[in-house]
Image (tube, rainbow, N blue to C red):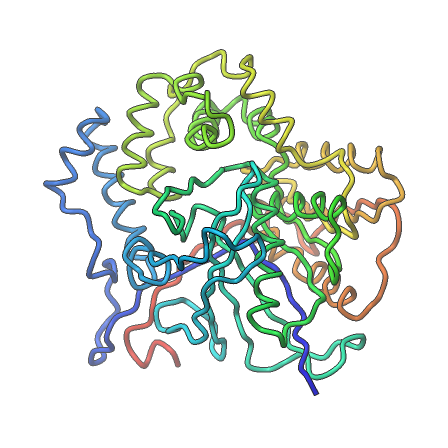
Length: 447
């Protein structure tokens, strides 16, 4: 009997570096990576071009080396799996699988015990509808879970795509693939086409799947639901959107008191809008100082840690950014909320979220419910909870919601909104993660 494996689609990826296991010694507090570290003397010249302060220059160097310490094996640009794109990528349609690594070395990754990993490349579509290659992975649990409406011996599987442009950064012809940051329909395409490719690569996977994401991934999941309303896909059971990005406008509106956040959003979104609007120039939104920062960010191949250091300044953007045609057009084309969606959908939001503000998510939910009151949308808010911890606070809610979908239990029709409160006072609870994952070097650390 064929085993059918229910799919949960997840828009996140976390990696860590491995090392040889030495004799037992106290754990060190240095970076684990032995490659990829930026030579300080070489970095000085690169950083100097951005005209940074000595203090900020040092912080950027530390952040860049920290990111490299978390690479899995090496940079994706040096990993043949991501760098060597099959020739059929130039003609394969979206949803095609173009490369499979059945057994991935899990020692390079920070994974729970008894989890296996496979990587694959697939074809997706960017915002403009061009088919491009992207990457993803599948997490395989050791013990399968039973669901009443799925025959055989099912396994819950996480299929997690990288956003197009991240992981794979060029096509089969060597052409650069930009990451179209906050172009949520493009990210939604990545989710939908990755699951179709995974189903082709591993026929044991079930047709049934759930889309789930958090933050930018939450926006991707919501947008995927909007895409699926127009273009249904067999087996789709619903969407979970945690702390979801809803639009560039919302991100900026609720950061009006935080000039550094405005500059960060405009710069990161503007870096690749040219791939959507060829006539766009980053200088339309970003001033000369911001352009130097943007150049350094790209030169260092900086990700979130480097960006947090570089973009935490208040004077990187021009004041007329919101009066440009590009801004309004991009916002209208890429926003979530107030549009038809394929349900059911569960939206999770913390009331103390300083990255995706609750009023913005609530406004998108309200606009959607006002236009489509008979759709199934469950809005769960969590008192005093911040951005990432909403997944911990709401764990019982979304786990049960997912199980119900796989068990064939229909979601209630219409919109509902619930504010969940903790057992003790909000001030009693740990607010944020106060630890980071580090690869265990010694046997006693796994006891």
